[in-house]
Image (cartoon, rainbow, N blue to C red; front, top):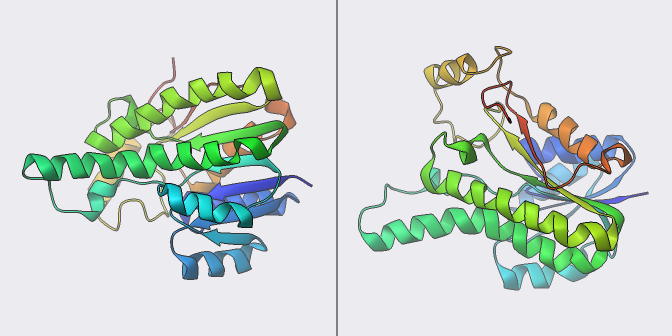
Amino acid sequence: MREVVVTGGATGIGYAIAREFTQTGHRVTITGRREHVLKDAAQRLGARYVAFDAADPVAVEGALPLLPETVHVLVNNAGGNTDLDREAAGDLASVAEAWRANLEANLLSAVLVTTALLPRLGDRARIVNLGSIAARGTGSGSYGAAKAALESWTADLAAEIGRKRGATANLVAPGLVVDTEFFRGRLDDEGVRRRVEATRNGRAGTPQDIASTVAFLASPAAGHITGQVIHVNGGAHLGR
């Protein structure tokens, strides 16, 4: 039975990914900062949970004894646009703070958790990072920049773990995905309509769309796919 770790696994896309793996017979551990939310999600999933801040090196180090001794699949899903949780930046100090917040939440969290778990990776392990269409020039400022940096790091990671371990590292970049906490209730019907109009299949994405793609990349069938950005956005951005 493969051990799967999903960061940010209590809600939205992360929850759908964790559910996909539990339903296919994997042993799953979900992580996140909100213990009460994690506990409830873990009970519904039949999974384990470990509460910690993935962007805090001390917290990651402290969580290691509670995480699986061998990890076959790591999904770095923790993150989000931290600008949605703060006032617009004014002076330079607040601009710097805002940029650091998105870089820590979306890039550093993945780097720290992955680095901590690298010694525990099983043979032919799979690492899947969650990026965003925002990395491809669709806006979102520091959030898009952080996800673009995550793409670059994923390519380096694939080279680091590939030849030594036969492992793979890829990134899944969603477009608009409904039924998540991402927009904090701020996306109105017009915003959804504009984003759906940009697709080629005429619909928004769902958490299950992303979960199914992650599951494929984590499967033995995807053993020769590594260092790639897989766009799951209905054609709103073409990966060519």
